[in-house]
Length: 377
Image 1: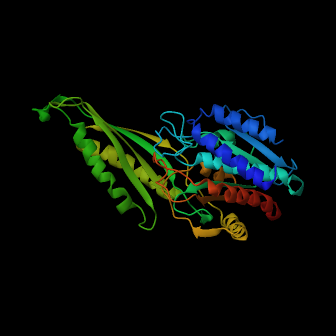
Image 2: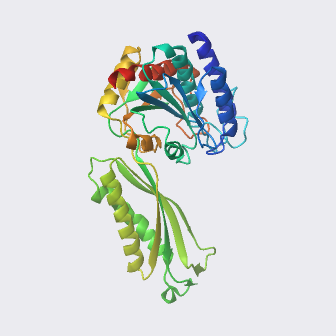
Image 3: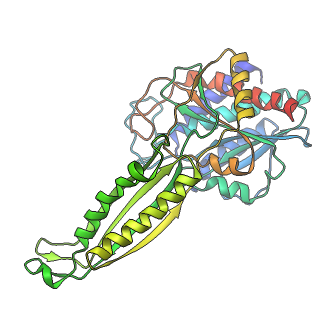
């Protein structure tokens, strides 16, 4: 395929992927479609123990090794975009641009295949499942396929920028993501006789208020971070003080030190607030991905390639959303860039959409990153 044919192909595929979103670890048809597309172009798909998602490769088959990564899962959202190619799967939507990511890296694969004789190494093309779960990145890493990879690049759509603009910054771009649950255990009693019981709702309420002091009093004010309590349940009627109260929330940070400190304070406050009212707390912690970490040298390289490609570069803002591309960056240096896809409601909104005109520039940019990265290794 020539460049014009590649652009038409990936635009058509983008429409198909948008119409057929699949949830994390359920991306069966998406994977089959990708496998067929790649095979038709003569691109090798590796035999890996992945139930969904895949890794392909182009190039010499020998070192050095570069990787391009995209994610392929959708979200449990009912689409309200009004697009002609809106989701055909009720209650499911590509509301975070993963259909765009798929089509971009697919386009990069086609472009690199067309230039294969000019490649001075091997490019792995990662079509990763279950970013939203999250954890799909770990599944790919566990196959061992990336053990020799020396640099990795990823992308994400951004409604902050127009088509032709990229957001790039060194260091953290997205935050670490942790979830926690706390059960406050008391003693149930009639609401008319609180002195005969131990009220877990008061414990929970006290904790929610106290937890808001963690970021303001225990973390450097110059370090973006947050603690959000997002869900509380307790009791089932109006005249009974219940036995327990349960809540859950999330912690977001940009540094490992802040992440550790906030976790410590949440445990201390949950246990302390419960004890002060005569009860106890049971806390469970679910560690998610760390913060992304764009290495300075590869960030500079990504900016240079963007400018040489005629793209506009702006400093990417820090975002306390999470991104499991960070798991790759724990082991492999590289850069994660934001691709302008036109103004739109925010990601995870039922009216979210991207401008397909961004596909061509994005695919060419990612392919050029991979091709020119070999000279730096």
